Amino acid sequence: MKLFLDSAKADEIRHALESWDLDGLTTNPKHVKASGKSFRAVLDEIAELFAGTDKPVSVEVDPHLLDWRKIVSAGADLSTLSPNFVIKVGASEHGFRAIRELSSRGIRTNATLIFTVAQAWHAARAGATFLSPFVGWKEQYGEAPDTLIGEVRAMLDTHDYSSEIIGAAIRNPRQVGDLAVAGAHCVTAGLAVYQESVRSPFTDMGEQIFQAAWDETPA
Ligand code: E4P
Image (cartoon, rainbow, N blue to C red):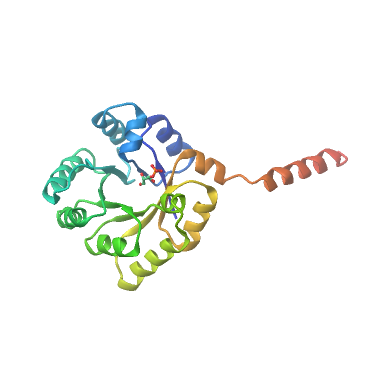
C-alpha cells in the first residue's frame, strides 16, 4: 500500500519526503487554507518540492465549479503547472463527466468525496486514476466504513478497472491497518497519524523489559 501525505504545508511535506519515503501527496481546499498562503503560492511551492520525481500530487479544482466544461478547463490549466499534478474532482454527474474528458486528454484525475461503491464505479468507468473514499468522514457520521474499501476493491478487480483506491480522511492507526487489509492501493493521512501508527504501548513496555534485562546481564 502506497503512503501519501494529506497536507499543503511545505515543512510537513519536506519532512515526510525525507523521513517517510513518501509515495505521493494529496491536498484539498481545507489544507490549502490551513497553509495560510494563496492557492497559487501553495501549488508553486508543492510543484517545486516534487519536481524531478514521478510522485503523484493531487490538487483540487475550485469546488464551486458545477459545469463539467469549466471543471475540465480549470483542471487542464492546473495540469500545466506540474507533470506531478493529478486533478481532484468531486463525485457528481458533472464531476464524472469532467473526469471522462480529462482522462481522454491524458490528464490524471482523483475522484474525491467518494462514499459509496456506486460512486466509485462511476469514477472508475469514467477513467479516474485514483478514487478517494472518505473513510474517516463515514465513521465520524456514524456509518461503518470497514466494508467500503473491500467492496470498492472487489468491484475494481471484478471489472478490471485500473483506478487505484486512496483511503482518505484517515484519523487513526486502526484505520490505516484496516485499509491495508481491505486492499486499498494507497492511504493518505496527516503526519500525526503516521507517527502514531508506528507506536504501541506494548512496544514501549517491551523495550523497557529488554533494557532492564540488558542492564542486569553481566558484562
Ligand atoms: C483526501 O484526499 C482528502 O484531502 C482528505 O483526506 C479529506 O479529509 P480531511 O481533510 O477531513 O482529513
